[in-house]
Length: 49
Image 1 (cartoon, helix red, strand yellow):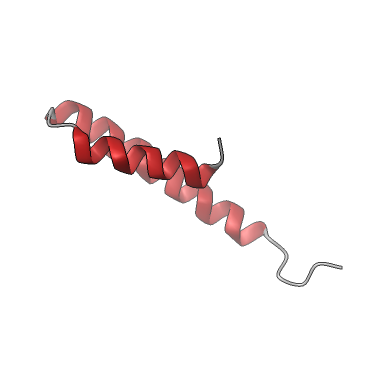
Image 2: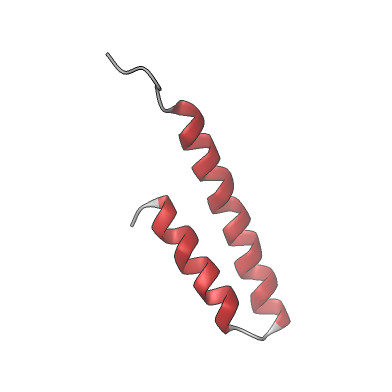
């Protein structure tokens, strides 16, 4: 599963759940995944050889 797929899966879970504790947990996981995606994006060479 790619980071982007994981992010979409977490967003779908957030739309479906109602338990506040679970929402908090999924939001934290989503934030971590978004940070990872940004980190990966920053390491992509825009001008590959």
